[in-house]
Length: 347
Image 1: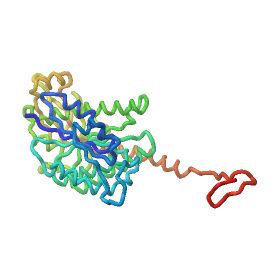
Image 2 (image 1 turned 180 degrees about the vertical axis):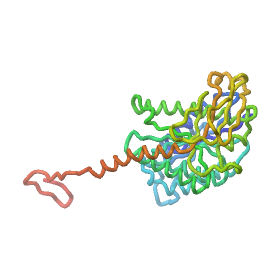
Image 3 (image 1 turned 120 degrees about the horizontal axis):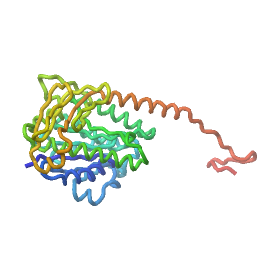
Image 4 (image 1 turned 90 degrees about the vertical axis):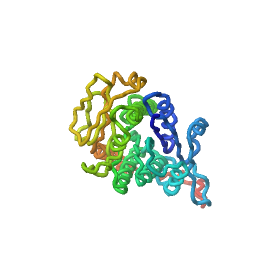
């Protein structure tokens, strides 16, 4: 029986991704994980009837009963942060996500540029890592405008703090919408979503438990590299990427651990020096048919990418702050004979 992939969508973008991509992942068939979908948000506006039917929706509400029901964060990360932090443990407990389960792999998905998801996701992640539940992060950055870039940068810094507080290396599949900007914003988002589906479908193949020579512990160890005791892998942010045939890492990034899948007759060679590498063979005929033109496929973790992403984002956000500080609002006083009342009306 195939393993289970538990997808947890956080905030509007995360929920839509789990709904769209999760449905496609669930239809991949033999050789891939079964899919379970969860949705969390501070607003109900992003939750369709279909999402309510095919998954489990958890509406984050205020713990202060004197306040109105939460209705989103409006891209301001501070707005509902305290209520989110207070509610996430309830979500985990209500859904029985209390400890590591054999054959169950967890993925938390969110936009780093939004107001709710960028708080929900790291809060869930921290709680899961403290329970030693292996969890992959799918994070969508955005540097197409000032507020989104600032939120993305601060969300990456938040994930770094989670790594330090839990003493865990965090495995992150990251895309930035800006890198897909060849047309309009909607096209960029669609292309980013396609990229995420391609990565998650390959990850589902690796995690399925139906491949020869790669078992569940092999996959747990690449998701949570703190399991290694002989080799010491420091807490921090690690990129987790999928490569077909040849691995080309970003400049100045250092690989740590990798897993490779191939089919009979195709060499599994990988062009990297690694702390640990394990190779397996795809057995399911359906999965072979889907991936036979792409093998060997490599799942690789590497470090230092987020240092470079931070530098790039800081350069942009510093220019945004400079522009904000340069804004001057000129006075508008009305006509030369005008009078202003105490109510601010000008006559």
